[in-house]
Image (cartoon, rainbow, N blue to C red; front, side, top):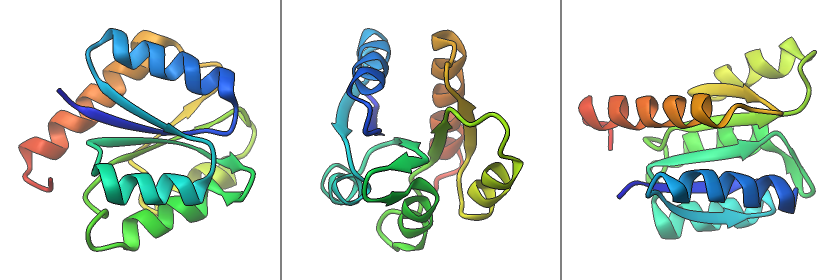
Length: 129
């Protein structure tokens, strides 16, 4: 069973994401702040992090950079999630900070599951986990 860490301050989005992934037999941990997400990542060592860009305690792009600069966590793939479809700058900065993918809200559940599963399988296949 794969582990997913959801970091999103919107309780409805978190609940929907958790439900989607639990229905696919993923183990899910959810956090509402970037700092809690970093602590949960250290504790849980998830197979994937779904990270909102807009968090109450900072920018998800910065949290992504911190995850990727941590020796223990840098192998964990990150999918950034945002409702801002217009910000090309955020997309570029997210990729530069180590994000593996970028998904816009509202997302399509089947597409998100396929993206997550593909990233996890590639990560495990190439032995970075």
